[in-house]
Length: 305
Ligand SMILES: Nc1ncc(C[C@H](C[SeH])C(=O)O)cc1Cl
Ligand SMILES: [Zn+2]
Ligand SMILES: [Zn+2]
Ligand SMILES: [Zn+2]
Image (tube, rainbow, N blue to C red):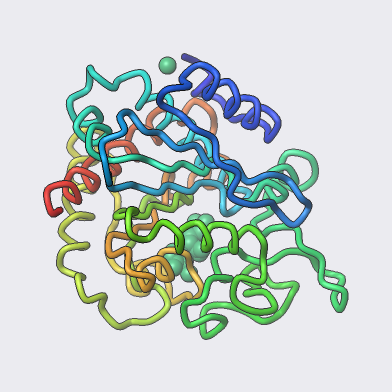
């Protein structure tokens, strides 16, 4: 439907969340995992097709960075595709028969709203610090992974401000708490960003290699190859520090160190032509590419366990 080929306001996404639950009460549950700095709810959808005992799970968060609008669009796209094609598409059927999926469409609702009302290029959350006129923490520098070392800034006015301390921000704390509670069932962590068309995995916070580096590289490579074959788009892939930049405090690194060994950051379309301002006409291609990557990686995780 064309609903999924448009960007949606925060209000629309809350309404969509509710409607999706109402329309699929046996497959969807809505979980309040916390609230934002400005007290907006952080709702995650749990997609669970059957109640097979001790099923494993996938976690997908979107919208950690406010201006990266293609990210929440993908979370909605993923839920829609899963519900529409379960039982028809062999890959999604296989994944959902064996795994539950937690989807957090907007991890940074205050920032997302701000990009609709005030500043389209906003990145951070909207937390206020008494001792500074500047607002916001980069939520992807606020996790406890080499926190606030090189690649982040302790300056509140910086776009990569790490916050007062690890998990100082309620949005980061909500996700970290949920994953700490569910680390034994969540096997695959995906966090969706834009832009630059990359499939990244730990570490970004250090140049050291992750202990399952070869495995992660193989999975990312296979996903990038499938995207190229189906959509002729080039996605670069590799460990974050070498592939994009050295940066500490990211969610993927923290989740990895928590023990969830399959952890990826997707940077979706494009490569800079439109950048964060990817037009709605490009949403379907961008989301279908991301979908291929999610399916490829999820199926490989299934094979391994
Ligand atoms: N662990 C990480 N993984 C990926 C990235 C890249 C994103 C791209 Se917008 C960022 O800069 O926050 C950054 C970090 Cl700190
Ligand atoms: Zn549709
Ligand atoms: Zn980002
Ligand atoms: Zn980015």
